[in-house]
Amino acid sequence: MSRPTKFLLAEDRIPRSWYNIAADLPVPPPPPLNPGTGQPIGPGDLAPIFPMALIAQIVSSDREIEVPEPVLDAYALYRPSPLHRAHRLEAALDTPAHIYYKYEGGSPSGSHKPNTALAQAYYNKAEGVTRLATETGAGQWGSALAFAGAMFGLEVKVYMVRASYDQKPYRRNLMETYGAQIVASPSLDTEYGRKMLAETPDHTGSLGIAISEAIEDTVTHPGTKYSLGSVFDFVLLHQTVIGQESILQMEMAGEEPDVIIGCAGGGSNFAGLSFPWLGRTFRGGRTYKVIAVEPEAAPSLTRGTYAYDFGDTAQMTPLVKMHTLGHDFVPEPIHAGGLRYHGMSPLVSLLKEHGHIEARAVHQTATFEAGVRFARAEGILPAPEPTHAIKVAIDEALRAKAEGRPTVILFNLCGHGHFDLSAYERYLAGQLEDYEFPADAVAAALARVPAVAG
Ligand SMILES: Cc1ncc(COP(=O)(O)O)c(C=O)c1O
Image 1 (spheres, helix red, strand yellow):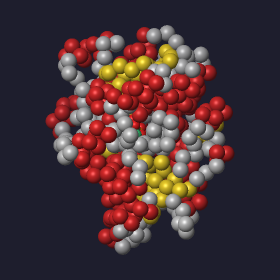
Image 2 (cartoon, rainbow, N blue to C red):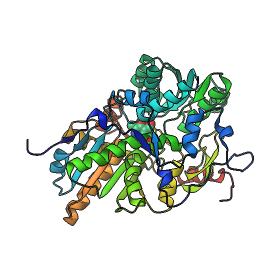
Image 3 (cartoon, rainbow, N blue to C red):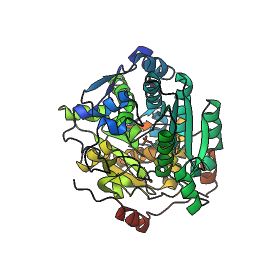
Image 4 (cartoon, helix red, strand yellow):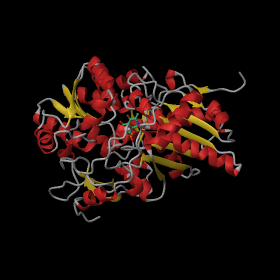
């Protein structure tokens, strides 16, 4: 074997700290605001829903934040994750590009999500919390938190977006196997869910609604805190183990990426891979072409407005400055449930606004076509979310071919698709729909974004 396919790190190379991009950002991020007062929120505003250790991470400007030993121990169940060189995909595309992917699908729950689930479970447990409430879109986050709850001895209640609940019954079974309690959202378990169901009995749900239900659950159940799988700064922080490992692994491969790609729902796997690389740029290193890929059905970065908006539909979260389609916009039920979100992480939004990253939106049939092509070349069945990254990685590889330019491409294969076979079945049967950008619905939702100066 003259050409290595996998670049593997020993267990003692699991990063011992998370990389906090706040230390290197060229522009300061606008603060989250209290919707009642319009003033920046303080730690006290978040204390009812998050443990103090996580709140401290949101406001920290330390470049490195130590990973607690029990979290490292749990990471060792699946980290470091492999970096693969996609030799077979390169050959299938007949491209001069070198394509690498970081594979996060080998975690126990099948995606990058445990990187933060384990950290959040640990900090909550350490502060005496006994139960976590959360939402899940694709079911990947719910599975990750259910797994983390089992690792640290916490009860977990998951509000699962109805569209995914119906599309992926086995995700539900996995979460229940880990010991979590699952309900379809909108649900009858919260006042907000009951209100939504009264208005629309067959509601397909959305991440925005499920977040509202999970927060309502949190503030109405003693001993409970809220946990989330994306968007918030500390979630992105925990995901930087991915990018840090990839820097070591690309060194092993003797190459540096020209293009770095991740799919973006709330932005956590994209940030996890790209932030450690962007940090090198901000500290005076070379630049990379960094691309966030989102669905045409929920194109917050490419078609949304950069404005203060709520992270959830019921307006229970602080106001954050982000690319948004409007907090009550409900995206069509695409199979990439993890990308069905109206907003985007404030940090990713800031970087897009200031031109440090690019964004592209793609249709779902094109992403499944790319996913099938990838599976036939590399053998791994990708989750519908990372097929968005694969589609753009293939586009970039074909561009390199057309231009006759060797290009090194690195993308995040952030989850496997073993629970998404009904979506593949529909694609293979030619039954998958594309949804045009719903300009009118977005315009109407944007009209309801609160008017906040700044
Ligand atoms: C496999 C997978 N990829 C991507 C996402 C999108 O989230 P993020 O943009 O935070 O990585 C999800 C969310 O559920 C997911 O399950």
